[in-house]
Image 1 (cartoon, rainbow, N blue to C red):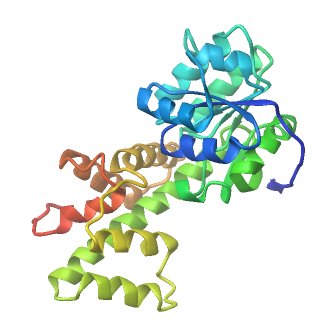
Image 2 (tube, rainbow, N blue to C red):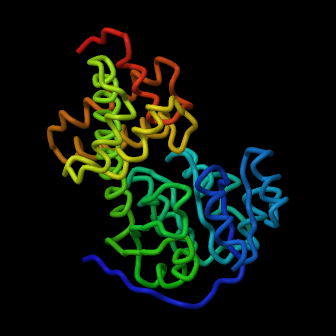
Length: 301
């Protein structure tokens, strides 16, 4: 059952663990409305937060002791498990938040395991991965897995970073939705890279190729195409979303599909291309950089 409702109200202190690209975007939106306590392993990241007015915690335990709601914005399942249930994680701290909301992209098994561990000490848990690009924070959509009560507690915070907060089921359901979405992202990214390289090889100007299609009304044109095709044409590899992160998400997505007993040739091809990009040294670049795999190189397969 899908539920979309809206709420007003407030939570005193919000903690954010992970102030990279997405976490920093959330902090900027939340800071005017809540006392904000942050922590990240990256010193430069937290110093930027401190300069902007966030309180920087010494560690996860200190953040947890002060926060009513803890938001996680972390790179993957292993880090989430360590931050939530590790020896010095959120659940081991002296104080406990009302709800942990994980906005990272992880597998549903990790989300469910962390929710179970949280429930043992009376802490609510939501998986609420982001649908949206960093610069759109405030207008994101958040699919949410978890109980209605836990969502009601965290909703006043979540509704500040997202225009739509939609309960899609129990914990784990939102992670499944996000992983399937990111497989679609991977497929669109891959075919955009492939066709942009092909167009240039066949004598079409890349700028002309994308601008003609982007404004054509053709059913094949997506918002992602409109975003990454200009980056390819302009050779702009500054990362909105890195190849490394896409590769991680797509591996997790493929595993979910295969666990369901479904043959997934397109997902397999996307995962393979991402891994080829990582092997070619493109991992830290924007996903649009995968076009380099098709430019002037004979590829196997």
